Image 1 (cartoon, rainbow, N blue to C red):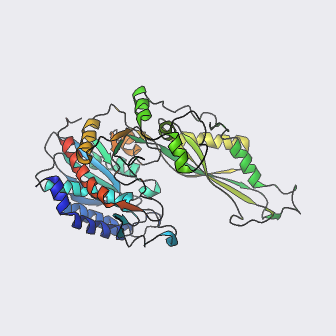
Image 2 (spheres, rainbow, N blue to C red):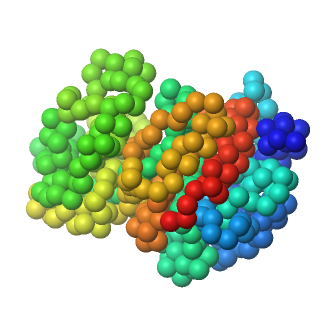
Length: 448
């Protein structure tokens, strides 16, 4: 029996398991169902042939499962996360988020693509290999319970449990495939620094006629401060902001330029006539090679209704997307200094951070992983030097010094973090075959 026929024969069981797994809430933001989900993840690991353990952290527990391969083969650490986002507005879901349903060739529910379906595909890929003999390489599966919070305790775990994370490389599957729907291998992610700026005026909102021109307006102060932080050309004006940006190599830039997609298609997808500045950057450059400063929210104390008042509080929620070799702490210090210099009465409120990560094109195992994906999918994956979004990969590349390779398995329209999250079933089954094929190719690769 081949791996493909084994997967085909067990589709019904795979689907039943995924339905039950998604039905178990595991919301790290509130703690709902976390302990039960960790236990369920450990049970799934045991059922496919891994030796599981649940390890406490200062936050949610980490779940690990290990199985040995032949001596001298690479040790592969597979990273995923069992926690999920909150459901969000329930009235926007077509079916209950934790009562998953199968419709139109997809499974719908919170955590289907992000990330239970994707790491479950890896677990069943391991099972399929074990059904045909010993594993081709040593495997450790690590499931994070706080990824949706920014994995604040994963660096702590790496520092305190290096023995449990001893490996030659890391493979992860999260987020969607490339925008054209084809397979891809990702070598990095941008980091993120989240913060808020809070300006205060009087002790209460005041009438804009009776107090206009007298009461200080925190909204204007905040808008004027924000205007000093980013110019009309898109360049961030904070002193030193670009000092630690590591340029892409010529090979990395060539890979970026070869990626499918262009600015015209991006404009059409967004329904706009112009894109954000600078105008001379390609789509790949914008999403991978440059940091950004974004205003996420801009509100006053009377948000939600229009009243002719001068507000007493104005808040801007912001983020910076970081690229190598930027570090969140250094960028936060630059932002704080800028705010203090322009308007020292505005409060800077840090809201969490995640460092960027990048594995070079010359890193070992890329050829084995790319070939394994092509074996399973029947087409060569595109190589993405860095994603625009963020994952806690710096723990592996920066703290443990391991190369990281991403193999996203979900559909482009998976709606992760949104209502009606979903996963195309054919991609779930293809992900099982992909995991088995990649591990097989890695087993034949020379150890690092």
